[in-house]
Amino acid sequence: MRYALSCLLSISILFICITAEAKADDTSDSIYTLKHVLKVHIATPDSALSLLNTMEAKKLEKLCLINAQRGIVYAGKGQQRMALNYALKAYQDTILRHEYIYYLQTMSCIVNAYKLLENHKLSIRYLTEGIKAAREMGHKQTEANFLFTMGENYYALNQKQEAYDYFIQAINLLENEESFRMKPYLSYFYGELTSYLSKEGKYKEAIAICNKREELINLMKKQDGIPLGYIDQQSAYLYIKQAYLYAKSEETEKALDYFSRFSATNYSKKKDMQRYVLVYQLAMKQYGQVLDYYEKKEPINQTTDTINNDFIEVLVNLSEACQGLSNYREALQYQKRIQVIEDSLNVRDKKETALELATIYKLQEKEWNIRQKDEQLHNSFIVQVLLGCAFVLALISLWLAIRHMNIIRKKNILMANKLDSLMSYEREIDRLHRQIAVIEESDQENSLNKSLFKKMERLIKDEKLYLIPELSRQDMLQRLSIDKNRFGQMLQENTNMTFSQYLTEIRLKHALTELKIHPNYTIQAISEESGFANTRNFQRLFKAAFDMTPSDYKKIVQEKQHREPPMD
Image 1 (cartoon, rainbow, N blue to C red):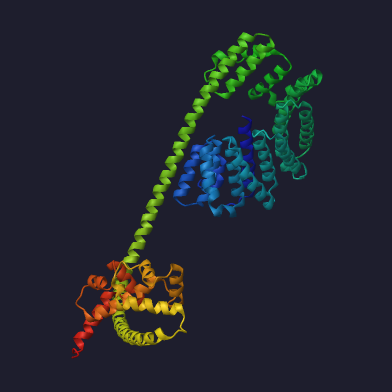
Image 2 (tube, rainbow, N blue to C red; image 1 turned 30 degrees about the vertical axis):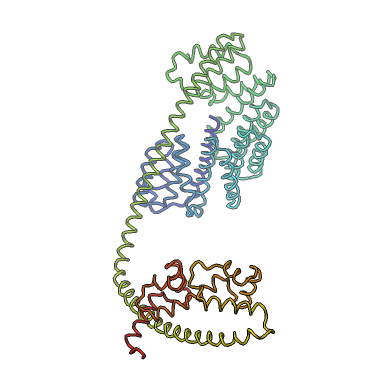
């Protein structure tokens, strides 16, 4: 109950701010305005939601502000998950940051929803942001409210010292404010802090806070514009609380004095105040009067709705009164009834939670379907635009493809001629190398590595060992009678290649010759004739080496042979 009242006050603070500060629009007389929804949402929440739905459909207001207001309406209905769902949607919209009053309102809704759903860590996380924002905006009412709510979260987490630190910060902030409209909120904070202290049995500290609240109420009495009914209400709450605290402190005379003051107020005659009177009577050990009240004025056997927290409170009072009169058997019966009702409430809460979550799921599914339709329309428009350009792009692509093919053809012809020249040079160089090799064999000054390389090269080329696909480095080591380290050094110094790369180069050159001599051979035949074990590997290596495929080179050779007469 206290949490619900706290939430209601937190949101009401911002409602007053909005009413006082929000600018009026051109349609202020219309019912389809946030200002009007604000007025009617507590009395007729379903009507308020219907108005917001119409406003969204007609796009009469920014969606983030509509969602923010929905969050407030659902919070007032006690549907905290629905409130959180819409408040978070509003919060995630960057536009909300520019509407600072609604931003603070939404933050208040989020932190209170998380607090009431007992997700205190998330509530604290958003409160940290909210406190910073309220300070930057100079909105001290909201800052104080957030500070007090932060304390309530820490209290729920059993971090009581941190909780009281935040309570005091909130109270100090309002105590130092001269603005008179802050005083009602300060009175509320005094009352809440009194309840927390009383709950822990810190009656002297609670009485001290009550005294400060009494001074505040006396000060408000002197101010013009404060309704007398409000002063009477605040006085009633204060006096009955003071009477209870003095009773718990066993200061009977003061307890009776403050109860007399309470009874003198008009608000004490309200039926809702009887619950506080009964708590006071239990503290004064007036057990008979408590039982007499429930027997004569509010018989529990005539209560129709018993599955609620108010009826649990009745049973708690009856149980305590029976224990005070040593009627433990009847007290136990009341406690058993309390347990049954609490179990029923837990079942009801679970059903309501499931129903609320199902509603949220349906809403999210509906929003997803709407987004899908919007995306489909958007995609359809894009497709139409793209199809309009497709024909032009196709023509351009075709022209570019033909042009590219002609360029490639010319390049291949030039490359084939270049390769022919390179092969002629290669044969001439090979002939010269053979001549030089004969001379170098007798030259003792040549290095051993160079001699070994020449020897290996003669073996490979003269015996055409490179045409053997299985030829390996180990075969050459055996033929040259050297170790692998010497072999690697010799290759590095003379070719700067590995043995596999060296063989590939020789085989590719042989393939060029074969393609030119035998243009009618298949690529697979040329590959096998050149010592390659795999045709695909041959094509890949040929392309990497000469920037054209064997087939391209073969076509060029064939075309040249058709154009040129054979040489006798």
